[in-house]
Structures are given as structure tokens and as C-alpha cells.
Image (tube, rainbow, N blue to C red; front, side, top):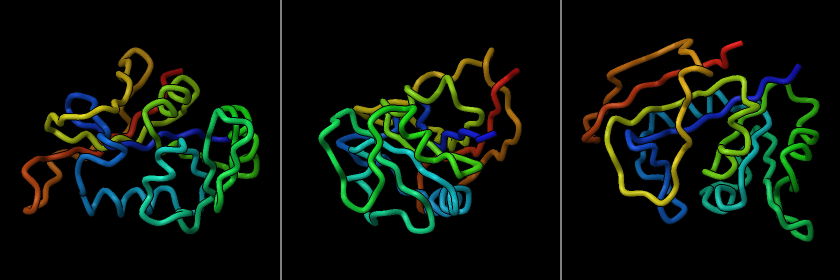
Length: 164
């Protein structure tokens, strides 16, 4: 059985991006992202793909979800629906959904786990993560008061699992 995990960094106001860019740069969070996703299948939207500084993300299967059936994107596997993307990850035990906003919304109801970096600050944004329903999700692990001398905010790493 495949595990579907969402990984995202979310501001206090659920902001995740603006102008197709991340709103912050947290080196420790990027290291955590790499550690968690290495060796797994990643599913992302086209805008997220084009925003990556390094393509494809090494050591991972990169699948880009697009709704244009004529589109074929270089250096990745192109998928044309949620089911198509999942089918292309059939040999992977864990799939990570890495964004953006519309892709998160499409996968939230079928995800098993959420790896969320909660950034404790509001940001001006044009892309947001959907609300997490506490009736559907429970906290499995939590690390609070994460900080860096270079940043003017704290963050928490929280892992949720879907309630059965």
C-alpha cells in the first residue's frame, strides 16, 4: 500500500508563495525536505516545477501534473490527472506532494500524512494552503520553537496523520 504524504511550509495565514516563489528561505527546512523526500516519488504542479532552481530534484522521481494533454515537459515525467500521477508512482512506497496550491488541494483528501513546517508569521501571498480540518487530522510528532539568528520568525515542524 502506498503512503501519500504532503510536504509544505505554511505561514500563519496559510500563505505558501507569491509570484511563483517561496516566501522565506529556511536552510534547515530545505535540508529536512531533502532528507524526507530523497529516494521517493515527488508530484508537483507545473509552476512548482518551473520555480525549482535545480531540475530535476536529484535522487527522486519528479512527476509534473498538468491539465494540458498535449504538454510534455523535459527532464521529468508528465502526468495529466491525479490518478495518472499516482499510477506513474506505482513502484514507490511513499509519494510526496510538493505543491503548489492547486495540487495540494487536489491531494489533501487522499493524503495519509502531512509534513508541515508552520512558520509563525503572516506573509503577503497569492498562493495558500487549504485549512487543515482537526476532525480529520491528528498530530503525530511536533518540534516547536525552531529558530535561526538570520530570521525574524520562529517555526514548528508538525507531522499529522489522517484519523481513521
